[in-house]
Image 1 (tube, rainbow, N blue to C red):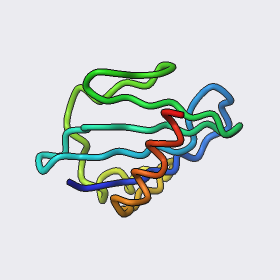
Image 2 (image 1 turned 60 degrees about the horizontal axis):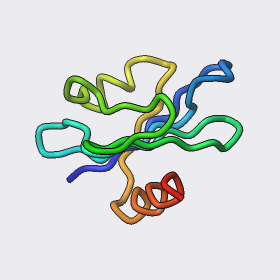
Image 3 (image 1 turned 180 degrees about the vertical axis):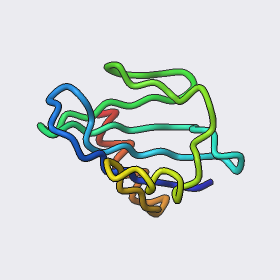
Length: 91
C-alpha cells in the first residue's frame, strides 16, 4: 500500500483542505480521509462513508502530475500517520 497527503490550497469553506488516501499498487483508493479548515473530518472506504466523501472512480494520477497544479501540494506519508487519521475520522 501507498499513503498520500494532498494539501488543497483554496478559500472555499465547504471543501476539504487536506486529502489523505490509502492506495493499492494500481493507485486505486482503498480508504480516504478528508479534513476541512474547521477540523471536521470525513472518511470513505468500500463499505462505509461519512459526509460527502467518496472513493475516487479512477486511479489517482502520479504525485508529479498532481503537483503540476499549483493548487495541490502532494506528499507521501507513513502507514502509521494514515491509521491515526483514519481512527480520528471514524471516532
